[in-house]
Image (cartoon, rainbow, N blue to C red; front, top):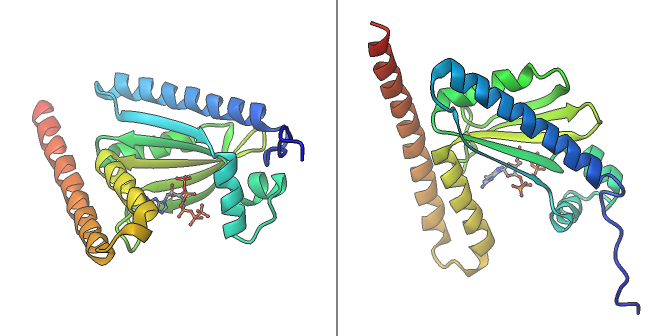
Length: 202
Ligand code: 0O2
């Protein structure tokens, strides 16, 4: 067997165009960030990450969903080949940025899931949006607070280590408790911020 033989990419010839689409969105996020920083006097975005789903993860996702491992599955059936995650310090900023994203004329909203108002059973919270970009690619945008992001990272580690965990049930219930406490703290922080800034306008 030829050891140099390489499997064709599940994304076919689309990777460079997908990368351009992702870059274009990041530029728009940066513009929103600058506008809001000017408007409110502080940067609403703690950090922003982006990625093209790896070849291996996309193939695994196709298999998991009973889809053939094709470019059509990766780009048209799955909607998260391109992913952007925007992390904010405060809850209100998540919704403000959501509204600004919806105004971008080159992006069409295909789907929105508010896992903040309706958290998943395990405690997962985040605001998910699927956009279709002008070039035809789907982009998943996740918006969340720092505490939701920290929680999701920890829960993600647990999923990978599941097989080795003797006390999984306890970890799952502790994670749920933390998720609920963090959600309540996010609301309190938001309220305190409003109190501080309403003092300014008196
Ligand atoms: P990755 O590597 O982060 O992209 P699907 O997109 O088919 O997997 P669904 O239900 O259509 O599933 O999408 P949903 O619920 O909007 O979730 C998609 C992504 O949200 C996941 O992508 C995770 O990034 C994140 N997510 C959703 N639920 C959870 C959760 O319970 N815990 C954590 N930590 N993250 C979650 P991927 O493809 O799983 O992974």
